[in-house]
Length: 369
Image 1 (cartoon, rainbow, N blue to C red):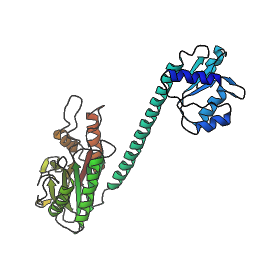
Image 2: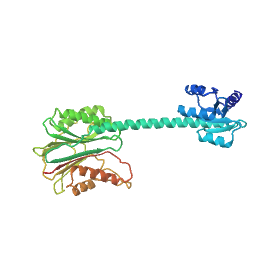
Image 3: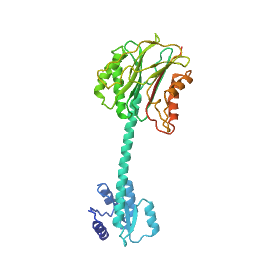
Image 4: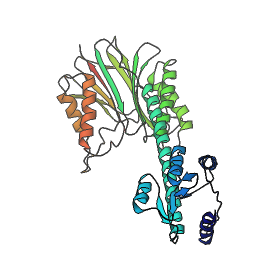
């Protein structure tokens, strides 16, 4: 008891406001540990009914990260080393307590730093788990497989730059039975754009149940999206309406990048250019549907966001539209699924060790009669 009062006095003299409890049995120590009130444990090596090794074991079983400092008058160096290896944080001699206050200060500070680190790690793990769940939910919004449409070979994939992305692709059955293929890109990537992507998807699917004209669908979608999107964001999107029986298509493009269309010889047949500004910029924008285009045997159409084309390597060289076109020409005999994989894989090779800068999203449509 006298030793405990001396130690308490030294800590107060060192500037601490001290609340102390002296325990002499395992039961007493467990009771005090469970209060959660204390910052450090100072343990005499030997007590009549207790010992420092036993106290250390109880602390470890309790699971709390408290500094444990052994104070003794006579144990040897070997015993001191042994107790330190068991998990004690420091060892002091009763005859020389000049290090008591600095030792307590150091160990309490380091314990608090460890606690802050654990809290930060727990927060990061929780955030990572939330992002994983968000990614799983978003991936379920994408089509599980491409539609089977006679002589058309269709494949689509979206590879986000982060856990969640702002790119979107979809296959939507229209009111008149035709098939709409959609590729969209919300500015940015991450949770915010992912939410806007999900909202855009919902509007397009609902409108496709009631409207036949894709220009009208984009016009109506733009009106509602304009109310929800701030000035810093917008959505580029292309919607292609495919008539399988007649082998024709029409499209409407809200500010989306030009999409190349190749013939069976690999020559660029045309590009599907913008027919209006991006969605969400002006609520009164109207979108026109293009003329009807015939699809011929061997035709290949690539609907893409700008992620692949705008990928930069360490030398700041763009992947570029010409490289996209070359890959499509050189591999045009491959399946649509192969072509999508080749484009995304080559873009990732281009950036080498850099992180993927943007979402990669592509739909390939081939006429394979």
